[in-house]
Length: 89
Image (tube, rainbow, N blue to C red; front, side, top):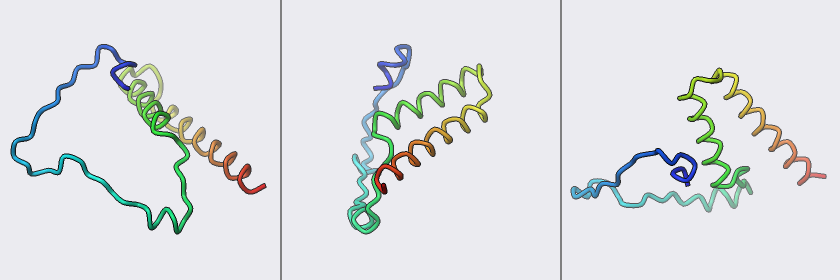
């Protein structure tokens, strides 16, 4: 997904022969999710997009990263306010 957005991105995948780390780590959040009824505000795609935007701005140094970060946080809060009031009306 990121490679589509940043065509110049270079990365490699290495095979860990030591088996020190599990190939896939999973956290089962079913109990707490059922108890709290919490749902994520962002989809996986939205999360990656937002994170990618932050890194692009950070490394380009074209914008003040603190201002950019605050705007992203405010946008996230606004989304959650809308979702809260939509669910509770």
